[in-house]
Length: 517
Image 1 (cartoon, helix red, strand yellow):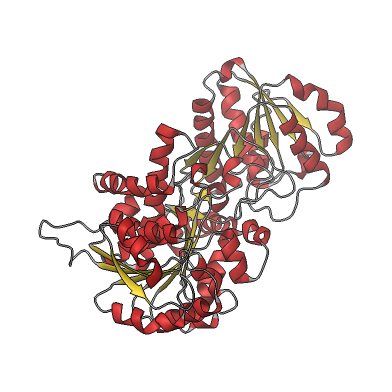
Image 2 (cartoon, helix red, strand yellow; image 1 turned 90 degrees about the vertical axis):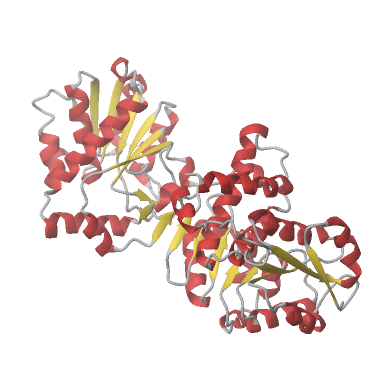
């Protein structure tokens, strides 16, 4: 599903009006009418409520004027608070504002703090607010008068219906710009915005409705949006049907290099998750002293004992043994539980440089690449990095807070610069590709905040690659299925106490659901 930035949406609006010839008044009418329909669905008892529309003087305010007109025509008690003098409203917004006068809609001008202080007390008497103040495109912090207004609306503890975007929310990053309306529902126009789908933005929008306003498809294609929401339909298109003649040789062989003393669970989880995803064969390369324990734990996976550089740790001395295991393998997963010994770092960097099959890198694989990204640039094969925010910060040599402030930007820029696929984990996982496209995952929940979840995801992505999915498709499908499996568990167990192993075991069921769509 297409997502758009503020600039992309502005370009679509402009080209629709100037090049295709649909008047701006028509787009505004379509927006306001569609938003009103959604508003009535969300608040079926609105006829019993006193409704306030609080609007700016721009096009977002204009959408609010259209909504006010439709509500008034339905006999709903409506009052418009305009954050400007009427003579400051221009264009299509002004035309729609003028239509309210014959209907008798009360318009209260509150262009400044002084006028606001005079009417503030009456705002407590309204039951529902429609936020048409700022809309999309906000970049800098909300300050002064507008901040006072937004904070006041939030303090009323009344439901708010946002028009296009809760005022104060950055529509590209999902970050509040100093302050932000907390909406019960949001009607957005033409396409969802990236800020609707990432956190913390997703916490501010409430129920979301996308209203079709008539943007022609060829204009959308010409603008070329680069952000997408992963859907079940997309994942279904990625998955490869399994023929009746399938066998373990045809469904792919994965090599996993993982584990060290105290962290054999990570190696086991990665290996078994690939099998649960449908990989035909999995071989786990592990320090030879740890091999007996893992052989006893994993009945369905094979092991390859590797020379050790220290007690339970593998390093560059294991490279030749790993290289001998590569023939016949379709993917290499490396990193979970490997540790960060100096010799291990050398091994990982060498594998990244020389592997001729796709490599999925997680956990200590990522930690060992921090400061060594020159090896990533030299990679011969596709590289998939799956960092959580802390690992991403280490790769970028920055703070976690900087990563979290703009997850999309961090993932995309890194992906393009180093020609790798980046799976930036977290709520609404971000998947960035070297061509600049970004996909946002809608599945998963807070119950996944426990150890081993990343190991499972590594195995799922790698397990899909060996079955024939391209690395890009495997990232999409792996992240979506991983989160969907967790969502199926939270329905029955709640967000506390289910384990990574439970998610792993639920993967086949989620694949079945997708295939049957």
